[in-house]
Image (tube, rainbow, N blue to C red; front, top):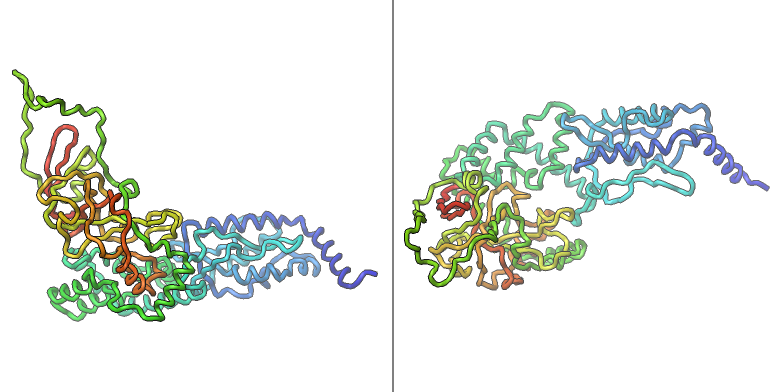
Length: 533
């Protein structure tokens, strides 16, 4: 005897066969393709207040019968449409682009429903950012049935370990509220004056803060109304963490000091005190027991215990903007009498000319392209730099510019106030070969310019100074436990000292005063670099 349930199943199967020619698979492929195109390049995703989407979907299908409507009344598809169908990205004009609902001819039958969904979601209001760790959004199949679903690209998945996706969405909403407060407190004229001060290079490491102040200033220029609100959501979601706290950051006190009409000398003194290398973002007290427990749990979740071990980097491990040309055809200096000139020799002696004064940027533009070899006059005391990397190449990244898809675990350290050349096995006042020019690792994640002149044979002889893991360079999720990381770093050792070959002399804005000797294939010339630009 056939039960009622069996009869219903047979009827559903018959309906499936009858309606299976609606090009549903073509629609699923179009949705996945549109989703991939819309979120490409890390375009952030937002949840909107669009509601009633599943009923809208059913109401706009050209169903000819109750059975046909019931065929599409699927709880699995309903969950997808109501959970993920509301999602959007924001274009450069502030318009919303639904990530699931493409335009164009998708297969005829489903076009009116998809078009209705796209129109409603496009006119909705953003209520939060959207983050997910799920590698599949929706349920692609249940038994013989297929449903709405997409597979997000790996690069858009939520990867932070300190915050769940829900916590990250809440934090993003709070950052937006703080930025709105900052825009209300800091008007365009005040921000313009702050930018003028910061760009004058009259404050310690001021270039670091130009970008966040400019970012806040640009937000004042966004359109009014819904488009401007959408662009604010996008800006906050894409911005580095520090940009979204204008009042609590170092820039906040600068803005308040300018607004209060303080003299520049007082402003400079207060700003430079906050930017002291031993103070800025550096914990001033030992970590609490609660923070230690939090750090242990976070390190375990992220699997970064081995990442905390550091060693000196080798020259072959760093990215270079210049390195000497090895001229294999250069003749030997000859035997013991090679320095004696033969009778009637026509060789013209090369004169040593005074060093030409030049900025670093001009040197890079005019001299470096033809430089085949280079030497630096070693200062007796200077900004000598140690270049470090991960002890274990397969350890997960912990530096903010080191990514899974673009590994570069290089960092650097130097001593506050500089260090003597003798500490690095060098002799002040002598010429030393430059084996490479290496950009400051943080350039990828920071606006502060800087390079390292890698000096042949430079090795730090000092031990016991820790392994130079600084909060300023760490991934954002490690900031809550930075006091623990710093305490660990102070007691750690740097490995690979004997193999170190990437150390050298740092060059940064406001801290330049070096003499370089360059051979371009025709002769030697000396250059005194006195400033960055």
